[in-house]
Length: 184
Image (cartoon, rainbow, N blue to C red; front, side):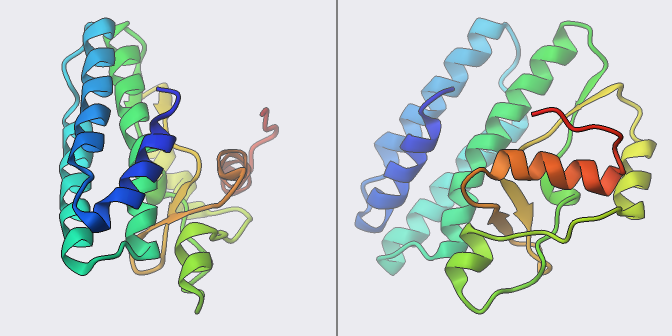
């Protein structure tokens, strides 16, 4: 799904003018095509993300802008959709795989006064997290597929971890789980 992030950035650019519908349809087509190629049903999680993109786009058109909070939501959708497809494919192949929303594990440090930093270049507290460890230990799947690059704010909004965010996410997960090793 290389290039979806570029399409999402194009959506962000076009949404305030009410011109994002063709971009959303192109993203839908790419994901549907991949699901067909993988011979898996189109995941509900992907459909939900596409519907959210429509709503955010409509809101941006009404407001004439797309604030950082909603930009983060748009950009996170690429990771959420790709991992939903990946987890569905691995499960169909017989691997005991499940999907995990990284936002349930990674919470940003807090609401920065600068909306750009708070939503588009956030950071999380590093270190062990017993709640995350317990949540993941309770999962029954052997393998969990999750996202890089995304987290949630203390109020539950989506936030991005900025450039290099996928590697940063892996480091946060390793720290929270007190992993013996992290391979990037």
